[in-house]
Length: 316
Image (tube, rainbow, N blue to C red; front, side):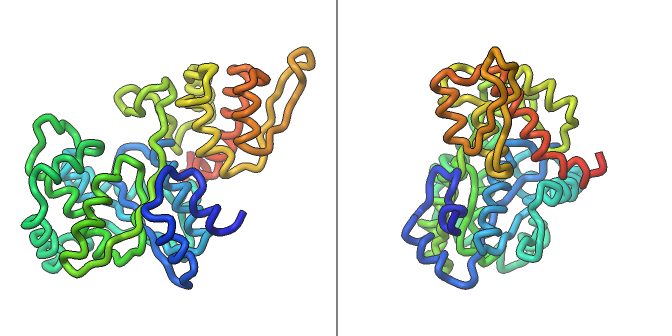
């Protein structure tokens, strides 16, 4: 796999591909993703974390913003609680492999409270309408039927983060697209460059619905083996391949980290079978060659193996 294929696998959009191809030719290149500190880092977060590790291995310098102020603005807790979560989340990122000399963690309050940063936020606030700011938050904000003023500051700060961190590219889930497009449009107005943007998919929760802490339909990177097995056994696994959460776990988490998985079956059901790519796995499942229970069992063991270093790192 060449560096461009590594950089772009498992993405849904690159704005633009030509810009990325040009950037890949440069000896120095950088990308950032911001994460609001949260209680658990789970498979939803791990989609972009895996992509950051791909980009690191493709030659990018990685900057991870632990967005404590953003979490505060988005009503995720008081600053003391958010600070504790930021430190825990950093350890979780390192636990799954996001570390090394080209990986830097930056706390939001360390860069977002200086005068130059605040002036840039205000300069952009003069130009962006309330309607545009609200629309950009549709996919990421809480209680957007009655948004607070703080939530309108959120996307503008995210735009200034890109400029302040001095990165070439912004990475995020596809739910970040509207904010990123706002950044491409308005950052040049304050003398900043328009960033290249890369977007990853939003995967389903284990029950096939939106991943949510209130539903408990996620697996965290700190999950025990027993808990992973219990949750995966109950996972929704329809005959279809589209929006199938078990196949999504295989595509975005297991196969990027493991070369093969093994279906363990008795001889009367076809015997054991080794699968060496996600495409092979999806094709076999679509053709009815793999039973949902066998798919879930193989996915479970693969996921346990992938997350094993994280449990060791966190001392669990």
